[in-house]
Image 1 (spheres, rainbow, N blue to C red):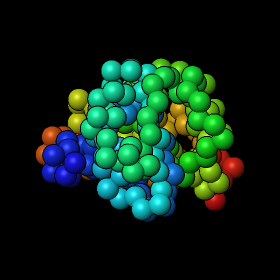
Image 2 (image 1 turned 90 degrees about the vertical axis):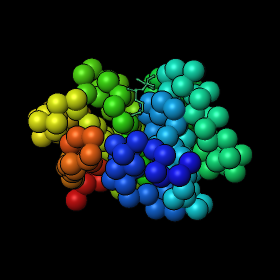
Image 3 (image 1 turned 120 degrees about the vertical axis):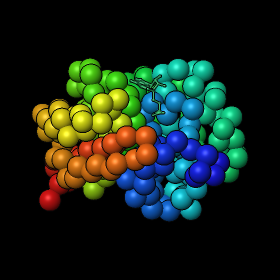
Image 4 (image 1 turned 90 degrees about the horizontal axis):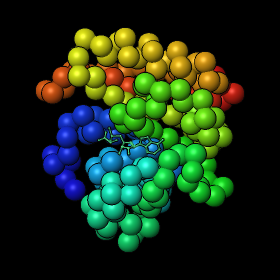
Length: 179
Ligand SMILES: C[S@@+](CC[C@H](N)C(=O)[O-])C[C@H]1O[C@@H](n2cnc3c(N)ncnc32)[C@H](O)[C@@H]1O
Protein backbone atom coordinates (compact mmCIF):
# COMPACT_ATOMS: atom_id res chain seq x y z
CA UNK A 1 0.00 0.00 0.00
CA UNK A 2 1.23 3.46 -0.87
CA UNK A 3 1.23 6.03 1.91
CA UNK A 4 -1.13 8.33 -0.02
CA UNK A 5 -3.83 5.62 -0.02
CA UNK A 6 -3.99 5.44 3.77
CA UNK A 7 -6.09 7.76 5.91
CA UNK A 8 -4.11 10.77 7.06
CA UNK A 9 -4.81 9.95 10.73
CA UNK A 10 -3.23 6.52 10.29
CA UNK A 11 -0.22 7.90 8.43
CA UNK A 12 0.36 10.35 11.26
CA UNK A 13 -0.24 7.67 13.88
CA UNK A 14 2.42 5.44 12.34
CA UNK A 15 4.76 8.44 11.99
CA UNK A 16 4.55 8.90 15.77
CA UNK A 17 5.87 5.35 16.28
CA UNK A 18 9.28 6.30 14.83
CA UNK A 19 9.64 2.75 13.52
CA UNK A 20 13.23 1.52 13.22
CA UNK A 21 13.99 -1.17 10.62
CA UNK A 22 14.65 -3.95 13.15
CA UNK A 23 11.81 -3.13 15.53
CA UNK A 24 9.44 -5.76 16.89
CA UNK A 25 5.93 -4.33 17.07
CA UNK A 26 2.54 -5.40 18.36
CA UNK A 27 -0.65 -3.69 17.20
CA UNK A 28 -3.80 -4.22 19.27
CA UNK A 29 -7.06 -3.75 17.35
CA UNK A 30 -5.57 -3.56 13.85
CA UNK A 31 -8.92 -3.35 12.03
CA UNK A 32 -8.31 -3.54 8.27
CA UNK A 33 -4.54 -3.58 8.75
CA UNK A 34 -3.76 -0.21 7.19
CA UNK A 35 -1.29 0.75 9.92
CA UNK A 36 0.37 -2.65 9.55
CA UNK A 37 1.05 -1.89 5.87
CA UNK A 38 2.55 1.48 6.77
CA UNK A 39 4.76 -0.14 9.43
CA UNK A 40 5.93 -2.91 7.09
CA UNK A 41 7.11 -0.33 4.54
CA UNK A 42 9.66 0.73 7.18
CA UNK A 43 10.83 -2.67 8.38
CA UNK A 44 14.04 -4.42 7.42
CA UNK A 45 14.72 -7.28 9.78
CA UNK A 46 11.92 -6.36 12.15
CA UNK A 47 8.39 -7.71 12.27
CA UNK A 48 4.91 -6.86 13.42
CA UNK A 49 2.26 -9.00 15.09
CA UNK A 50 -1.25 -7.59 14.79
CA UNK A 51 -4.32 -8.77 16.63
CA UNK A 52 -8.00 -7.96 16.50
CA UNK A 53 -10.91 -9.56 18.31
CA UNK A 54 -12.87 -9.61 15.04
CA UNK A 55 -12.03 -12.58 12.75
CA UNK A 56 -13.58 -10.58 9.90
CA UNK A 57 -11.13 -7.72 10.45
CA UNK A 58 -8.21 -10.14 10.70
CA UNK A 59 -9.19 -11.78 7.41
CA UNK A 60 -9.35 -8.35 5.74
CA UNK A 61 -6.03 -7.27 7.28
CA UNK A 62 -4.34 -10.48 6.13
CA UNK A 63 -5.62 -9.97 2.58
CA UNK A 64 -4.41 -6.36 2.53
CA UNK A 65 -0.98 -7.39 3.83
CA UNK A 66 -0.60 -10.72 2.00
CA UNK A 67 2.79 -9.76 0.58
CA UNK A 68 4.12 -8.82 4.02
CA UNK A 69 2.75 -12.01 5.57
CA UNK A 70 4.41 -14.07 2.83
CA UNK A 71 7.69 -12.22 3.44
CA UNK A 72 7.53 -12.96 7.18
CA UNK A 73 7.21 -9.30 8.20
CA UNK A 74 3.64 -9.44 9.46
CA UNK A 75 1.50 -12.00 11.24
CA UNK A 76 -2.08 -11.76 12.46
CA UNK A 77 -4.14 -13.36 15.18
CA UNK A 78 -7.85 -13.13 15.89
CA UNK A 79 -8.70 -12.66 19.55
CA UNK A 80 -8.72 -10.18 22.37
CA UNK A 81 -5.38 -9.21 23.84
CA UNK A 82 -5.89 -11.41 26.91
CA UNK A 83 -6.78 -14.44 24.74
CA UNK A 84 -4.13 -14.53 22.04
CA UNK A 85 -1.01 -16.68 22.27
CA UNK A 86 2.00 -14.42 21.84
CA UNK A 87 4.45 -17.09 22.98
CA UNK A 88 7.47 -15.53 24.65
CA UNK A 89 7.50 -12.49 22.35
CA UNK A 90 8.60 -9.11 23.66
CA UNK A 91 8.08 -5.90 21.70
CA UNK A 92 9.93 -2.63 21.24
CA UNK A 93 6.68 -0.92 20.31
CA UNK A 94 3.10 -1.74 21.23
CA UNK A 95 0.31 0.45 19.92
CA UNK A 96 -3.46 0.67 19.74
CA UNK A 97 -5.33 3.18 17.58
CA UNK A 98 -8.90 3.93 18.61
CA UNK A 99 -9.40 0.82 20.69
CA UNK A 100 -12.19 1.58 23.13
CA UNK A 101 -10.91 -0.35 26.12
CA UNK A 102 -8.08 2.16 26.57
CA UNK A 103 -10.16 5.32 26.19
CA UNK A 104 -13.51 4.28 27.62
CA UNK A 105 -13.05 1.02 29.44
CA UNK A 106 -11.23 -0.29 32.49
CA UNK A 107 -7.98 -1.54 30.93
CA UNK A 108 -6.29 -2.98 34.03
CA UNK A 109 -5.96 -6.47 32.48
CA UNK A 110 -4.76 -5.14 29.12
CA UNK A 111 -2.20 -2.75 30.59
CA UNK A 112 -0.72 -5.52 32.76
CA UNK A 113 -0.21 -7.64 29.63
CA UNK A 114 1.33 -4.70 27.77
CA UNK A 115 3.75 -3.99 30.64
CA UNK A 116 4.85 -7.64 30.56
CA UNK A 117 5.23 -7.68 26.78
CA UNK A 118 7.35 -4.55 26.44
CA UNK A 119 11.04 -5.21 25.94
CA UNK A 120 13.35 -3.12 28.14
CA UNK A 121 13.07 0.45 26.91
CA UNK A 122 10.01 -0.43 24.84
CA UNK A 123 7.16 2.03 24.41
CA UNK A 124 3.38 1.90 24.33
CA UNK A 125 1.65 4.35 21.95
CA UNK A 126 -1.97 5.46 21.98
CA UNK A 127 -2.68 7.63 18.91
CA UNK A 128 -6.23 8.96 18.58
CA UNK A 129 -8.38 11.51 16.77
CA UNK A 130 -11.46 12.57 18.73
CA UNK A 131 -14.62 13.56 16.87
CA UNK A 132 -14.39 16.88 18.70
CA UNK A 133 -10.98 18.38 17.84
CA UNK A 134 -11.23 20.51 20.98
CA UNK A 135 -10.91 17.35 23.06
CA UNK A 136 -7.38 16.32 22.08
CA UNK A 137 -5.70 17.77 25.17
CA UNK A 138 -8.49 16.57 27.48
CA UNK A 139 -8.20 13.07 26.02
CA UNK A 140 -4.42 13.12 26.46
CA UNK A 141 -4.84 14.02 30.12
CA UNK A 142 -7.37 11.22 30.67
CA UNK A 143 -5.23 8.61 28.89
CA UNK A 144 -2.12 9.77 30.74
CA UNK A 145 -3.88 9.41 34.10
CA UNK A 146 -4.97 5.85 33.29
CA UNK A 147 -1.44 4.93 32.19
CA UNK A 148 0.21 6.51 35.21
CA UNK A 149 -2.24 4.64 37.47
CA UNK A 150 -1.23 1.32 35.91
CA UNK A 151 2.55 1.30 36.19
CA UNK A 152 3.49 3.42 33.18
CA UNK A 153 5.39 6.67 32.91
CA UNK A 154 4.13 9.01 30.19
CA UNK A 155 7.22 10.14 28.28
CA UNK A 156 5.62 12.28 25.56
CA UNK A 157 2.32 13.71 24.42
CA UNK A 158 2.00 14.77 20.77
CA UNK A 159 -0.69 16.72 18.92
CA UNK A 160 -1.07 17.56 15.26
CA UNK A 161 -3.60 19.47 13.18
CA UNK A 162 -4.53 17.24 10.25
CA UNK A 163 -6.77 18.19 7.33
CA UNK A 164 -9.42 15.97 8.92
CA UNK A 165 -9.08 17.50 12.40
CA UNK A 166 -6.75 17.54 15.35
CA UNK A 167 -5.10 14.31 16.49
CA UNK A 168 -3.08 13.30 19.51
CA UNK A 169 -0.79 10.57 20.73
CA UNK A 170 0.22 9.58 24.26
CA UNK A 171 3.52 7.69 24.57
CA UNK A 172 4.42 5.72 27.69
CA UNK A 173 7.08 3.39 29.03
CA UNK A 174 6.98 0.76 31.75
CA UNK A 175 7.71 2.82 34.85
CA UNK A 176 10.67 0.56 35.65
CA UNK A 177 12.39 1.48 32.34
CA UNK A 178 11.56 5.20 32.31
CA UNK A 179 14.54 7.41 33.12
C1 LIG B 1 -12.51 1.50 16.16
S1 LIG B 1 -11.67 0.10 15.51
C2 LIG B 1 -10.09 0.82 15.08
C3 LIG B 1 -9.38 0.03 14.02
C4 LIG B 1 -8.03 0.63 13.60
N1 LIG B 1 -7.08 0.58 14.70
C5 LIG B 1 -8.20 2.04 13.10
O1 LIG B 1 -7.89 2.99 13.84
O2 LIG B 1 -8.68 2.20 11.96
C6 LIG B 1 -11.25 -0.81 17.00
C7 LIG B 1 -10.77 -2.21 16.68
O3 LIG B 1 -10.24 -2.79 17.87
C8 LIG B 1 -10.70 -4.13 18.00
N2 LIG B 1 -10.63 -4.44 19.45
C9 LIG B 1 -11.32 -3.85 20.44
N3 LIG B 1 -10.95 -4.32 21.64
C10 LIG B 1 -9.98 -5.24 21.41
C11 LIG B 1 -9.19 -6.10 22.24
N4 LIG B 1 -9.33 -6.10 23.57
N5 LIG B 1 -8.29 -6.93 21.67
C12 LIG B 1 -8.15 -6.94 20.31
N6 LIG B 1 -8.89 -6.17 19.47
C13 LIG B 1 -9.78 -5.32 20.00
C14 LIG B 1 -12.08 -4.12 17.37
O4 LIG B 1 -12.49 -5.39 16.90
C15 LIG B 1 -11.89 -3.13 16.20
O5 LIG B 1 -11.50 -3.75 14.99
